[in-house]
Image (tube, rainbow, N blue to C red):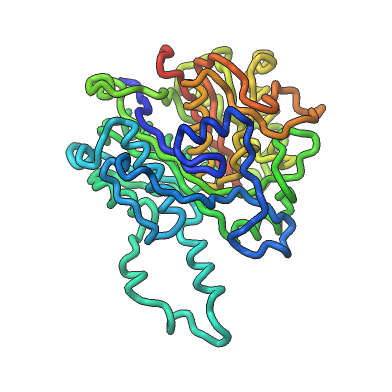
Length: 412
């Protein structure tokens, strides 16, 4: 069985659009939180978000033949830009995706919501939505929303899957890609996730009192909750033998994947971190990697009181005494909680760190929580040569997922 590698990545985030800008933001400890501009947030508990206001369009010479359009809304626009960067970075073109079996696994949760909210809230007094909406707009929209937009743009003819498991969506999409490639169901898979900031999710988390007023502080004793963001990341995954045969540059290896259901509570994790520990353990066993080889954990790290404490206990359960020597951080401190896209952008951070010899920081972390006994990376990125990393995504309802990621030159 040939190993599965990543040969291309693309990212759109509040601290950088494109992998080079994103890496620079990660290294510097940048935080993209700012007052919300997309809608009036004056009545909400949190008035901050990690929004993207810069033009999200790749260089026309680097789109790899992937058409870029804002026609289908922000979520799709983010995903298309990330997809174009990933395909181009992999040394491929849209024409290379039409032969063989090329698949798509996509994770997300808010496709179309910002646009629908704009339409509904823009109605005049007494106006009926169906009286003013243009039927052609709906008839021309792909049924599977973002996944179908991407599949059509890339000209794919293989399996296409949309995974929406809340905050673990994109991580599960990468796990799906891993399984497809191992099973021979696809020759190459485009995988990742995208989500856009909207009123519905912002209001929902505010109603649950899970948001911080200004910025998230994962694992910090002063943490008050998450802050919602938006963004996307897409990847090109293929079997290592195929990648080497065409002379592709390997950015990292997906060594293992774990996914479990806690079946515990709608919005709260188990206090002891048992679900998180099972997901990480499953990923390591799937990879055939001993816990002592883990050199970094990119935590789910939402900055809520319960999640951070539960996850820290899960990490300690899996790594034991080795946890003392393993740096831990949460990319959400820099780009916010990207909901279904979280796992994709965080995987991009892990890959850039593996290749660049650094681990991203917990931006803003200053005050240790006495109940969290982990080596939290504070301030800016820390230089580190990491062979194996874990990337965690834990969702409401207890859908816990973890990826075991290997250095491009490390032993599988």
